[in-house]
Image (cartoon, rainbow, N blue to C red; front, side, top):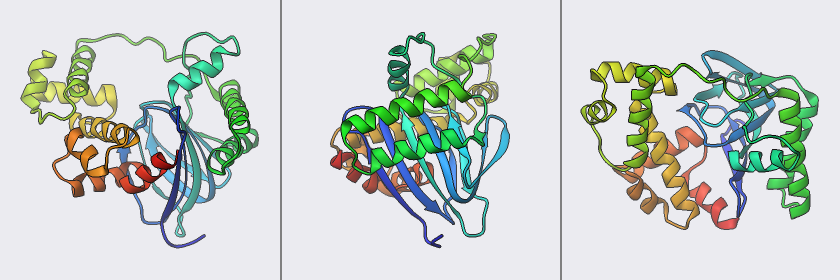
Length: 275
């Protein structure tokens, strides 16, 4: 394995399907989540991450599954770093593929983040190679269908069970909606507390972390990063995307983009432009 960090990125020109291959030694992912299913394979070395209340390690040959909006971080668990491939597939794409096979409208849930499953490893690697390697449209579609089908049949459970909707959960969801609607605004804790109808800023903070796995400020930054990614895909420059998404300056945006996604805004823009 090489000692230097590197990453390559690919994006589908039409649908929310993306693929990344990277090697990291020093890079540390800040806690973040994706608005997509993420299926990865560790090829060399090992990586560790916190997800769903536990600490996990993915060594060479193991498969990783993340549900949409699963908060997680990540770093190397080996002296020489780790190399991995990962694909991000939008929920609507998964729903469409499953509907074609007669499945219901509910999206699958992957309860475990790490798996020893050679069949899935081959499916994910094959999909990644087709996406990022310039395979024809038919090959990409077939491997996408095969990978999603294998993942769901072998590792998924039903949809998340309905949870008791407590007052704190309702308030957290109200606050999250305010953040989504006002993604670029410089909201205060008092603004959120008032809009959510919470008894105090601390009560809302605690309820929000319990519901979303991160503080309101982290969630706000995540929403801004997603908005910036969408703007870049639509053709905006990285600087314009940062500005319209609420980032105070380009350096701040660049730093958090890399910490969350492992690639620079410029590299992501290049992948979007090539799609």
